[in-house]
Image (cartoon, rainbow, N blue to C red; front, side):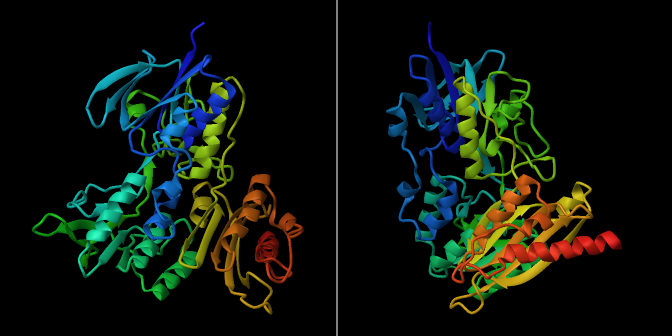
Length: 461
């Protein structure tokens, strides 16, 4: 009997994790695997691009987990710089175009995996496509940005549009390159993934590093010089000179072929799947990574979250199911960490506006502590904010801003959220303690204690 054919669209985390897992479970005689990647790299860490640009990582090779040659050695027919432009669901085939030669052809499939990733948000504004304006989603993007930085004139002025994770990380990277950096942000404070009171702490730290942050400023155009290259960003009626512009506005699911094929999309534009990562209503099509929406276990709604951690898990689940095994991806609680220089930023669960959006009543508790015992050398401040459900005390979200190991403390809260714990239950958690690592009461537990008090007071109001 002829081998089944699995076609994978996308050669990064979700796609190649799925292909690799399927190959572990089924050999070439049972399952033929054909994968298409539109770019020049596979299985790489897009999250590492700011650190490569900033010089913390020597080069793109260090961000690559597995090369095309390594995939091919495992009997995966990986076709690079080849973009799938059309999915024919009824005919069970995809149309691919070679980006270098332009040759187009159809390839049939028995099973299909869509892992097309996400694309940087690029508003349709004057000058947005000018040379010197960069997104940073792929290794090709990172290489193009570095080439622009190397050619920049003596003034070396950079504007970052957006102050989310990508924006603040790229601001630090540009600062390390010796650029004068301005971050233009339409929000109230940097890091809209935090509540504004916690974002203010990030703003203060960025100011202290010499990064100019302009909040509540909407970009209206990008101005160019006589050579057509970027020269300034116009926002809020003010012009900010720029030799390079980096877009840190965020990303959106790359689902054009899937959308045109009539596959189901969610409210955020991502593909909708069931727990097995199978596209809803399609028995032999799976999807994973940055092109899908996932269930938020706290809010009970789907979200679009572009993270390599999720993408790799999706791929493992998909590969197992494609090859006849079984796996599920139940959802997420929205955990993310970042940094700007030595300031660590973390969040999990819901922000205040998220809780309001789903009709939850809540209380908040914010505390200031240190990452080590106060008397131990090197103890530095840390701020923890906690949201708990009104009356029940169920944990809804945690945000942490600080130094000295602040960010990874959010993992305790992520586990508590996944387990559906109350803040009172959290106060009894047996966390590790020694003066070099934590005060006697860990900052997360101090916040939980304060949240318990807020819940009790709300219950008697």
